[in-house]
Length: 112
Image 1 (tube, helix red, strand yellow):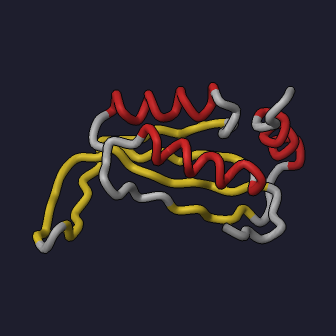
Image 2: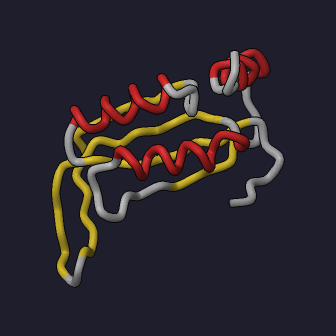
């Protein structure tokens, strides 16, 4: 995946339980793949799956990382995600508070 030259990216995913969301958040922060994860929910998701319209509760995870760590983060999400086809969206951050962005980069550095 090629990402633009930006200071940070937001990676979004959703899971079916609060426990799964918290486990995912703990894993990616512990692995230094994310500086921070906001977990919110439950929200109601409505989607088409295998030809049927589905509806159910989900918890969203908004994950903050750097472009350099995004590919490894995506692989880790896939490894721990409970869904067969997880939503994983990467959105570039075009700016932000310089001190926060420095903290984000430091928090996701592979070797502190």
